[in-house]
Structures are given as C-alpha cells and as structure tokens.
Image (cartoon, rainbow, N blue to C red; front, side, top):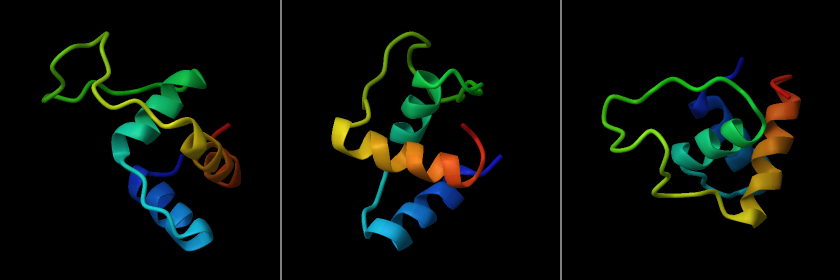
Amino acid sequence: MATYKQIQEDIRSQHGKVVKACWIAHVKELNGLNLRSAPNRLSVDDRVNTCPTNIRGLIEESMRRFGMI
C-alpha cells in the first residue's frame, strides 16, 4: 500500500497538480479502504475538506497504479 506522500508525488509528477492528504483520505473512504483515526480529527463522522470531483479521478488513477484499488 502506498503512502499519502507517494500518491501526492505521483500525481504531481504525472499531472502537475498538488493534492491534499485529506482528499486522499476521503477517496480512500469512498472506495472502502481502511483508514486510521487521526488524533487531531475533530469528528469521526464529519469531513471538513472533501475531495473535489475533478481531483477524485486523479487520486483513484494513482491508487490503481499502486495496486490499492
């Protein structure tokens, strides 16, 4: 399984876009992958920053390259 940093670097090198770690976590959650609880997360059920729809495809594409989904 790739780290968030590896996914961010992959997207930056492939598409020249910078993605937030919270967007990657949101896409992982949408695809049913396991997430760890962050100690600084305010609410388990609410997301402050959801992934924009135009970035979701890029993150999923990178996850496929790493064999995560």
